[in-house]
Image (cartoon, rainbow, N blue to C red):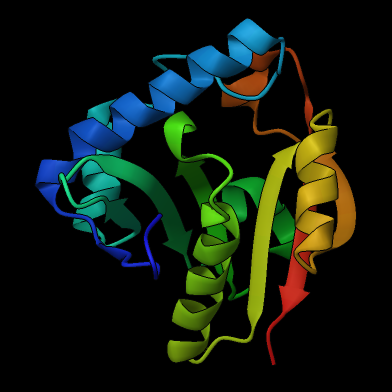
Length: 172
């Protein structure tokens, strides 16, 4: 197990691997009946554009295999609408299945908090499908407070769910 969270800013070379990990996890969700992501909906070209803006961070093991990723943005009007405010918005937190059970999610959330604070921002936010009770419980245990449910942006309505949960944590 890695000793610390060596998250580094993703490069263009990481975009394809990030998209592949997302597709892998999306397929796992579909196979488990979890209505959250759909394979193929987040292409490498989209990831590459976000990487170019410095939004993605990667964690690789000693063999250089991708084991975890996260995307952090400072505004999120598409999901937060009128409630959009400057915050460290966590998106795409993914851990490779073979690394589950090593507290990587907890460590990535802490990385995001540290990164957000280092940028002078004291609010952290995230969202997830409202029907995902596992994530609701997990993020509540991480100190996030549920603010409300909101409509899922229309371009994601092919998932079988139409609502998301918006959560926030103050870091100060």
